[in-house]
Amino acid sequence: MQEHLAQLSATLKAMPPVVALGIEVVGYHDHQLTLGAPLAANLNDKGNAFGGSLASILTLSGWGLVSLELAAAGLQADVYVADSRVRYLAPLYGDLLASARLDEEASWEVFLTRFAERGHASVNLVAQVLADGRPAATLSGRFVAKAKEQA
Image (cartoon, rainbow, N blue to C red; front, top):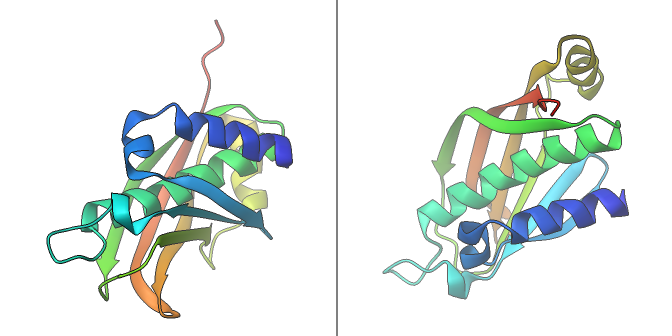
């Protein structure tokens, strides 16, 4: 998994908007990916985390998790967010830490099997950023994987 995490980190570092936000891989454990970013690079006019930054890190945590699960299964795909809903629940006055995991009603096994059989599949994820141990922002989203075109 370390190799896949290194590849994900390299991919994130190749995206200028991600670099500007300071988003980096923090860790992966038990099918949960955590990304982090410094508050200083993501401030709004009120001195707390900018909503666009929260939406970005939440979305990227889901995108990254799907990418990791596919890579770990030996599958190559382009991953996209198909749709998502972000809720802003409390201001965040600290660094951003977004953790994504599989939605309770979803299954990695079903997702990976469908992808292997059809060359595309979607999966529902949830992600959150905490402030003082409580959700500051949450995302519910559907992510789609499509087999990479062979050259």
